[in-house]
Amino acid sequence: MTEHGGRRWRLVLISSPLQGHMTPMLQLGSYLHSRGFPITIVHSELNRPDPSNHPDFVFFPLPNNLSGTSVSSGVIQFLQALNDNCRPHLEKHLIQIINTQKETSEKESIVIIYDNLMFFAGSLAADLRLPSIILRSSCAAFLPAYRIIPQLHQEGRFPIQDSLLQEIIPELHPFRYKDLPFNGLPIQQILEMVTMITPKTPPVAFIWNTIEFLEQWALTQIHHQYQVPIFTIGPLHKTSPTLSTSFLEEDTSCISWLDKQSPKSVIYVSLGSLATIDAKVSTEMAWGLASTNQPFLWVVRPGSVHGCDWIEFLPEDLVSEMKVRGMIVKWAPQKDVLAHSAVGGFWSHCGWNSTLESVCEGVPMLCQPFNVDQMLNARYLSYVWKMGLEMVVERGEIESAIRRVLVSKEGEEMRRRAMEIEDQVRIAISHGGSSRNSMNDLVDFILSL
Ligand code: UDX
Image 1 (cartoon, rainbow, N blue to C red):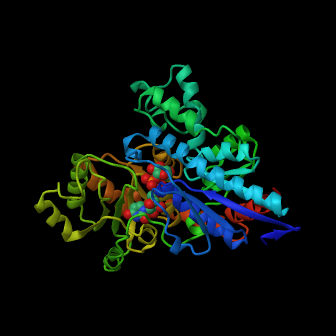
Image 2: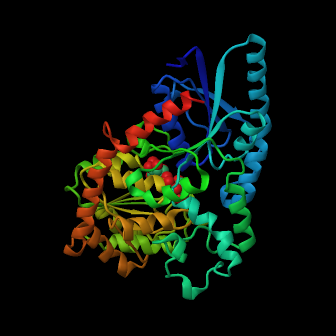
Image 3: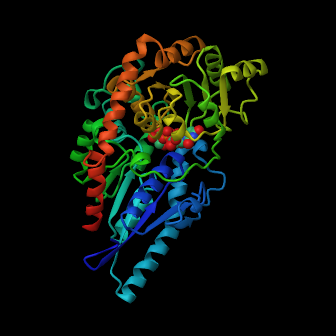
């Protein structure tokens, strides 16, 4: 299939070094490879994927010279440095390929598929006259939600006054002002960020790791704005699973621990790959977990609590109390955890991957969003899909929230909705379902370029 009508294709996938972005890119590569396309994964030196888990791909590392710059030291500086430093190497490489093709009159179409955070790839593709497609690994609603910020700023509605926080934004119904991304950062930084991540060169198409029925309104908005095909092929971890893509080592001992727990009794707690919190908040979480009667599995990522290596800040008696019913790990095989029959609820930061992974397994969620698209995802979960609960992270509130999501009568509707949505996802990813059809359409589209 690589050859079609006498032509051949080379797909160059440009990934970003963030866990929640790298995973969907590798999954996409895996699907496109299964359809006969040769895949080159271009990645930065920071957070390299493990080639031994993907023997069918060619890997092309880019020196990123980030020396000390990290997401936590400032996202704008990090993204700019990453993009500036990665561009020259890829440019040189692509020009070499194009020149070789000219010399040998080889007919090979190069298509660039890039993570939206690697925005240099869009302008590079345009300069080299190559078609480019953007892979988006956050919810579709994130794009209209950040694109409206400059308009809200001009009209005096952003930065948000406290009195408006709970109000619905008429242009973004049902999202509220408090659900907008980046709120709390200095306004000039937000505007700079919005400009930076808004595509300058329109792509020939978007690929979205979402499911049509979950986000119809946002997808229609984007289609009106960009007038290019949008392929909604999610959730990629189901439509195109791969071997582990984790940057951290997964502690698989939690699966044997889960095997010993009763069905749907465990609350799984994880705040993703980037969020960081104060020791005070983390201690409050620990007390909340210790006081519930439900078993729990808590991921505390090393370095995720300010100023601490791991959980050394928790009092020893509290840790011993917690161990009676719970398990604490540094990183879990999350997809397997959520698919385990013992897990009945997921207390999450609501990153888009985590949201999709929970939705697919019919696991209701406790929502503790931090930033970026997470507040939008939490709003979807609690208000639109009605399979989640926005929570207050105080020890007294935590216990009742956990009871509600797992066992109490009040949470019955939420648990029922989670199962209903799981069924709808199953249909979307089956033969003839929206995501399957979109995957086939994507292949036809690439072949038409
Ligand atoms: C970031 C942003 O925070 C998020 O809002 C955006 O949608 C994508 O990028 P991140 O914090 O990495 O996301 O969260 P998420 O999107 O949920 O991705 C985390 C990934 O790490 C998931 O695929 C999850 O399965 C995996 N994970 C997490 C593990 O494998 N083990 C763990 O212990 C925790």
